[in-house]
Image (cartoon, rainbow, N blue to C red; front, side):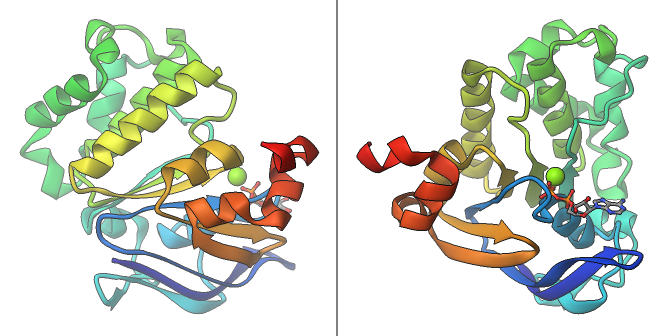
Length: 239
Ligand SMILES: Nc1ncnc2c1ncn2[C@@H]1O[C@H](COP(=O)(O)OP(=O)(O)O)[C@@H](O)[C@H]1O
Ligand SMILES: [Mg+2]
């Protein structure tokens, strides 16, 4: 489905990604974990056309998309849930969701799209007229995911959806990702929450200093000594 090869990218004189290759096959949940500053957000921005590549390629269904503008990438079925939610605080929850349906492929089905999002997130249905800025952090994350779903994606990219949320709220978000995945949408999950995201994922990658330093099944990565030592703490060895 998605094939990212040898991507180099950065900002001005600063190179951030040094030849990153990752792939997401149809029907997969793939996690990308790594410390703050590793280049995770930069990689997502490069995939969705918000940052030009200096080298390498991004292909979708076998066709290169790295020269395409961001809106055309949404139209082709890839949606990003950005870091920090990025909602319009003074618009209602429902207005924020409708903003996700700008792609022509989604415009016709906006009402059904809303109903589908409210099915997945019943809490949001009760609050549809509430201003987004007045919602809790967990509810705002649900709106950000719902807004991305409004474009009817076939692949959902998520940038640290669990950041700043209580463990119980995070568990709810991860359960929703399982459900979205069961509905046939590919999921590429970027997280600092290494334990939870690798436990959920079919496969995972570790990104450190702009390079992929580990890859494997979620299960195997959770048992990898380097991953355990670096991300799960010394006590993890005993668990
Ligand atoms: N807009 C920007 N301009 C310059 N440097 C940036 C910009 N965004 C990120 N960086 C730098 O790129 C590196 C990787 O950042 P980022 O991709 O946000 O990492 P992560 O998402 O893994 O925390 C960091 O050193 C960061 O300071
Ligand atoms: Mg980031």
